[in-house]
Amino acid sequence: MRNTFDKHIHIVSFDIPCPANYGGVIDVFFKLKALAERGYKIHLHCFEYGREHSPRVEAVCESVNYYKRNMWLGQILNSIPYIVKSRISESLIQNLLKDDYPIILEGLHSCGVLLDKRMAGRKIFVRAHNVEHDYYQYLAETEKSFRKRTFLRMESAKLRRFEPILAKASGILAISQKEYEYFKQKYDNVYLIPAYDGFDKVDIMEGMGDYVLYHGNLEVSENYNAAGFLINEVFKGSDVKLKIAGMNPPKHLVACAEKVPNVELIVNPDDEQLQNLISNAQINILVTAQSTGLKLKLLNALYNGRYCVVNDKMVEGLDVEGLCYVANTADEMKAVVADLMSKPFDAEKIAHRKSRMDDFYSSSRNTDKLVELLG
Image (cartoon, rainbow, N blue to C red; front, top):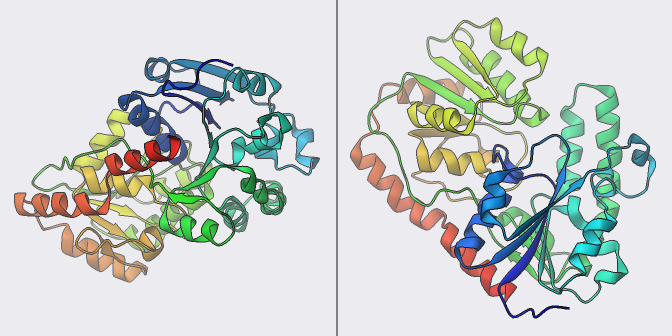
């Protein structure tokens, strides 16, 4: 094995982390950048299944290896969760065995590595993006397709049984306080490293916008259900314009939006377009039915958007006093939106947001903790 005293690290990602356009890969990509800026030479290992190889990622890393994800549906019948089984790769193991650099496995998805006896004794950290079995159970409860719902329920049960593999890791890097508290009750060496979002300063436009924005990955039931709620329960019949932006909305959401004249659906915006939508909105409204992780879209809205309206599950366990307006029912949201649409976001409000965000979140502090753990 080669000398390990240089600052080298392996990171195993469940997906190619660029474009950084949904929660999990946003955290991966900006963690890569933060570690590279601290002098780490990153050896990235990505599973590919639809996203193109990324020059932006390759520019950040010392090396990048791509592995085809094995999407054979017969693996659904295996006792190992499909999201794990489809990412088990002998080529990956062989590359990791070439040295003894520390390893970060991104998500339970990548933890097939921990099943391999050849990896015993390595310094391996797992980035816990969610309590995965809870997340999959929630997706099952909100999924409209019987076939997908059945798969998600099966996967949730398998993930619950598989999760104790985390005991083999050197440490678990929880993404939010809620996840930290869950894992701390069950495992040793659990550390809170909040999500990376790529923003390190508040950059908000003064003045007013003329619309409310909801954004998210609209392929996921959590998000398309939230969008449908906003359309039908909050903005239908209103004079306020609602823009909904996100990836691959289902047909039923497209049809729903087309029926409401003050709603505009923006499909698959690129990074620049999405940031412009966030910055120019009068209000960013963020709604979820499940409190999992530190929502990266919340951080984006707080760093770059004007007013932020959320429900309590979006900010559960977080001190957002002075940062967000919390509303839970449709009537509460209508009232808050009506009040805020006529109020400019001025220099005083921007200064207040800056002062609160310094305490609320710091990617630099996150990286300090991570570097200390990696040694």
